[in-house]
Length: 266
Image 1 (tube, rainbow, N blue to C red):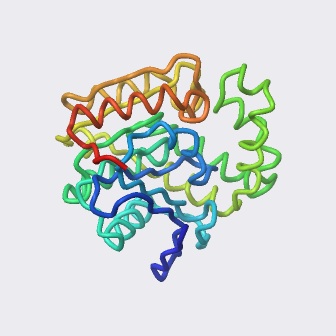
Image 2 (cartoon, rainbow, N blue to C red):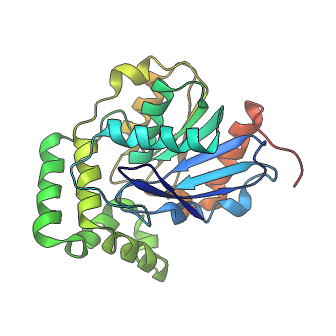
């Protein structure tokens, strides 16, 4: 794990696997760090280059003053991949990470050859809804909000199990300013026009129990991109890579095989 100092922000990242191998880049959701992907890593094919990073205001990345714009978050990803020399990657983004993926694909086709858009949409919620949440973060803190967040994120069975505890803690220790800053970025984002113009392989994944980006919203995203494939993971909520890591990885692996984006033997 390393940090890249970009001047206005320092991004914490992990870059594993052969540097000349096909690259798979992961961008996580609001209120999580790149440990979000830990469960699927053992299920991925050998021989890939895997890059994960904490977006600004999350995990071990620095937390610049809020609010943030989606353009800034996309630019962070762009600068990280440029610094690492990543080209022609498959970019996997979940929730706000999926918005970053859409913005980066529209901007830098030299960096992104295909996308996996998980539990996301071109526009999520309304500005008023996000402004209300930002006010709650600022006045009540994330600890007071974590119960409601777990309700939106996970299926009932997962919420009722001890497995939910570290995810609740991950939200609660997220810097309030980072959560609010990224919430402002989501509030100001409407990617319907640029996403509809994308012409690249796309896998779109939803969860049947997702309370943040319901399946119909995610399916609408798939319908925007010609040739995109939509897959629904039943019994999983907003973070299917946590609840169903094997099923989630199997979808990604099949997509990588279909587009010829697999590395050699480890």
